[in-house]
Length: 173
Image (tube, rainbow, N blue to C red; front, side, top):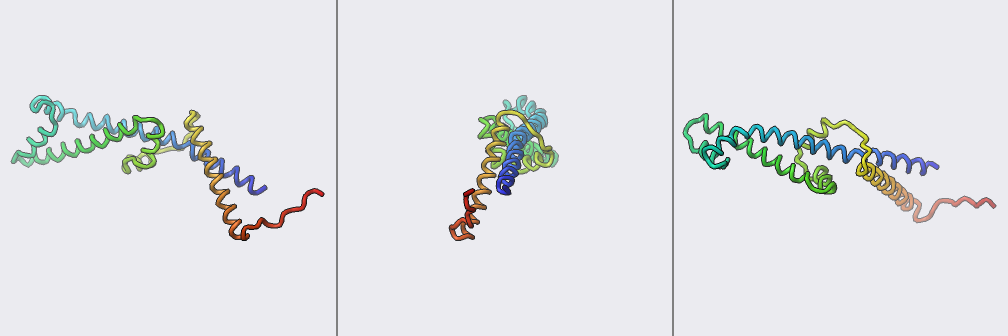
């Protein structure tokens, strides 16, 4: 009986944890999108200048700033370069989040930018999404967790008991 309750408890815990995955992916995607819009806005003035004087080439604008002897221009070159690097990172993150749900989930759980993932986790509030992928993740995680833990405990019991099952109760006869 205890084993049945343990199995149910593990399944429920896995179900609730698995349901969180799509919500986390959604929150991460929204955070990346917000930062990307902000980054594009920050670069917009420099893009307009590059469009006007360098045929839209931000790298040419950056080289122009770097070639100046004016310390203000050199400082601005560092700022522009930082904005460009940040924008490229966010564009790459955004592109990675445009694929199928498996790819998006893998990216957020394994390959995401650590700073953005940490920011997302710090602001994340647990939620129960009733969408098919959340239900699928929940059921899958619940089953896997219950199966793995029960198998592990049975394996440990098998090793401790030397491959024998304990005393088997006599049937009802």
